[in-house]
Length: 163
Image (cartoon, rainbow, N blue to C red; front, side, top):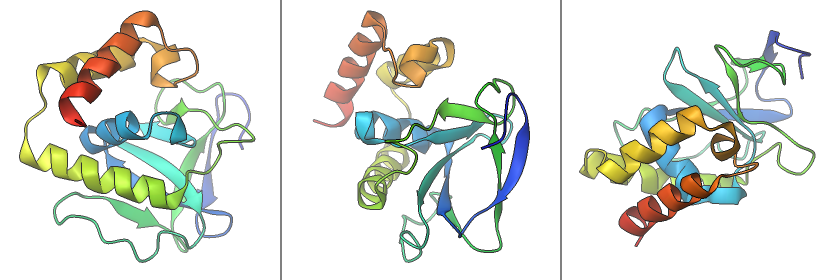
């Protein structure tokens, strides 16, 4: 991993593949995954989030048409931020020894479900409130120290979406 606030282009397909997901689908998937997510890179300029999965484990994924979800593997590079970077590409959920990679099966299921939810319905008020809160509360956004208000917003949104 790069140091400090730097960004380094790293090749996909060796130790990990990256799954590029549009922000609106990614935030729904994060809600569905909860603590089962691994590290996630957010690129606010591109409106995308990236999950890292074991290399080769997502090569044959089929995602809903129009979802704009892509698996980046060999011949692709990803801008990997340093741990202290907060602008541009940054860690929405920083890697730890136990969560660097996301389980590909769980991620696939969460993304397929999230893509279907986003395709069917425009974001509701609970979703908009949760997204706005995640943008302002690092503890909730990184799922490291969710605040009481964030937990309440997430529970309200999950009750509407995943029931």
